[in-house]
Amino acid sequence: MRATRTHAAACALAVAFACAGVRASPAGVGPTDAPVDAYADVAAAYWVEVDGRPLWAGRADERRPMASLAKLMAALVAVEQGDLDAWAEVSAAAATETGTRIGLRRGERVARRDLVLAAMVRSANDACRALADAVGATIDAGDPTRAFVARMNARARTLGLADTHYANPCGHDDPMQYTSARDLAMLSRAVLGQPELADAARRQEVRFATAAGRIVVARSTNALLAGLPGARGLKTGTTPAAGRCLVVVVERDGHRVLAVLLDAGERWWDGLALVELAFEARPAAHDAPPGSTAPSTGRRPEPTVPPRP
Image (cartoon, rainbow, N blue to C red; front, side, top):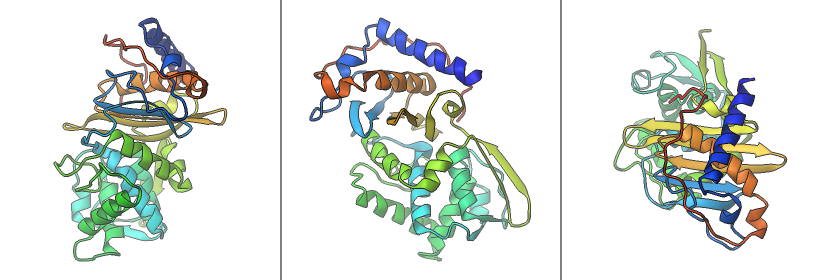
């Protein structure tokens, strides 16, 4: 029932956009067209694509803080490294990580697979740091975190992420920690190509046991999973410098919409609306000439989905 109400609210918001003069169809792009900046007020930078083809974007190559969207790369590197059933011992540094946490304790042993889940589902910094240190120790035991971050940057280069650089694995604000909306769309496609991560991104809860048998349970930070039909993830993030960030992926009837919002004050409502408008515009993405209509700059009401970090 809650999902139905939330989806109805999203559709109503999309209609409100249209009534305000923002129409989906004219903003469609043809096979050789660049994405149109049709919704400039939704975020400091954004990207929307349908079935891998860009539809709308604004300041897509601007380098910006990424908050916990950094965990997408951390999880990708960890999964590609393999050995996910290996135990990772929680270091003192991991146990005292700030921000969102799941309450890991120093000296506990947790399977890497469960740390990936906690980092993706709950955006837990203690789990992310423990994962980075465990994988990094296989590269350089002397400085595992630095080694892991170097691996993240190396993977960014192989993916062609020209405007991305990592200074830490979990997304803490740092002048040398930045990405772009376009790069995050490319990274998200790589993440979705990993079944382990695609499954983690759509989970609304993570539950696992440490080696000692302590049960850890945490809810997803992604409010859209419970209220948007077809939602498949992908990641949330919030820090003072980055603002509220979101990568949302929705699949319906064999088609996929992927939207990236960086520093979006109303990420839940605008994420919902962009998804609905993108599905509405999908046929136009193949048939209609490019164009756009200036969006409304008025504020929209708070969503019925409870905001989470």
